[in-house]
Image (cartoon, rainbow, N blue to C red; front, side, top):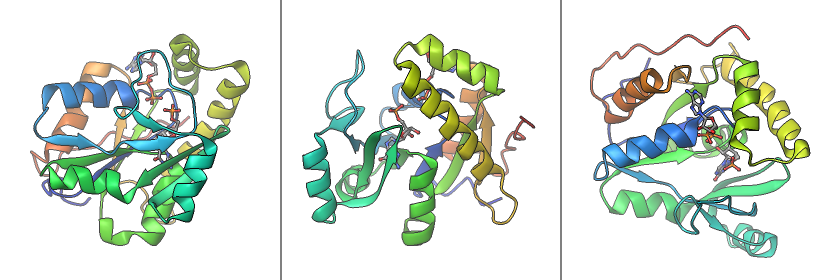
Length: 208
Ligand code: ADP
Ligand code: 5GP
């Protein structure tokens, strides 16, 4: 396990859609407004109720997104459930300039790209796992944001993400947080993010 004490390293949070990443991160930013900064990604998906342009995402058209790709603006970008998502160099730089620990919420394709093409970013990778696939499905359904088609695409991507996280060939994740009871999961994520408590024990990935 790498040190959790390297507060200056970016923290990449990934895991299946609906596992609770946004819920946990929202609380982290609310509890520690001066310590962390969110890497605001670009996306072509439509804003959900309550989402604000520039806060959760920079909402863009496909044309604008592809133009940014051409300009080389992205550290990584990927297609997920029919929409494009990407992290710009600027998104990460903006956080670093404010002297805060940068937190990225990206999918497993983004994780792969960072590992392959940007090892210099040297982030800590935290996988947020659902306690079970049934729980994941009910959370996604309960959130009420997806059409049936998008729900199935997200559940299918979830299996790939879990498979990727548990692959034994290379160490993909530095830490696992099982989001079963939100308070418990949050307390673990908070410790990892703050970099307190060297050797904070991660959860085990459920067998699925
Ligand atoms: P993600 O950002 O990973 O897609 P969200 O944070 O949007 O996931 O969470 C998906 C849904 O699950 C939301 O409705 C949220 O309120 C709910 N949720 C999050 N964590 C838990 C938990 N530990 N137990 C039950 N429901 C949860
Ligand atoms: P959602 O539409 O639910 O907000 O996000 C869908 C998926 O896209 C999530 O797994 C989220 O982590 C991922 N995502 C968000 N921003 C980015 C990004 O900039 N790059 C990549 N690769 N994935 C992203």
